[in-house]
Structure formats: C-alpha cells, structure tokens
Amino acid sequence: MKSTIRNNSKSTDAHVKKDDKVKVISGKDKGKIGKVLKVINKKNRVLVENVNIVKRHTKPTAKNRQGGIVEGEAPLHWSSVMLICNKCFSPSRTSQQKLEDGKKVRVCKKCNEIVDA
Ligand SMILES: [Zn+2]
Image (cartoon, rainbow, N blue to C red; front, side, top):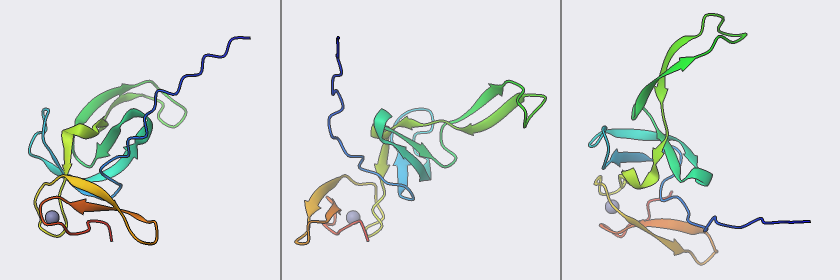
C-alpha cells in the first residue's frame, strides 16, 4: 500500500482573525477597509466584508430555482491585507508573543500594544 500523505502545511498562523479590521494592500480593492468575515487557514485566505466582490453565476438549485447571478465576497490571500491596529489605528504588522500563562497574543509592531483583547 502506498501512502503518500505529505504534510505541506507549515504552521503559519494567520495574522488576522475573524472580526479584525483590515486594510487591503494589493489587488483591485487596494486601500479598502473591511472586517474579516472568515479566515480560511487551509488556503491562507481571508474573506473580508465588501472586498473582492465577484459575480457568480449559479445553477438552479432547490432553493433558487432560476439560478442567476449572485454577488458576494470572494476570499483573498491573507498577504493582501494588513491588520489595522485597534490601539494606534494604523495598518501595521504584528508579532506574536506568548504571555506568562501561555496565551498567544499579537503585538502591534508600531505601538507595541497587544492587539488581542
Ligand atoms: Zn498599534
């Protein structure tokens, strides 16, 4: 039996989380600010509110008998967004720090404040 399960997934944690405010730094929506709706860790992608809106043609389904065009957010690569620090209110990079109790938190590299509540 051949088992070629490779573990390609490096444990790169997303620098953003659900409900974070982010700024888009590349792509067609560059400059837009939105809230993270979802983080798709497996694909290194994030879904950001009102960003990367695409029209999708949908096939008729049981719910929607006609099918048609649906507009919605498409996930974008998380390197395309930057976290907006909730302390200094600027787009900033974060570093991870471990607290004494083992909890991991993100620290804004600009103001050195802990971003996570
Ligand atoms: Zn900051």
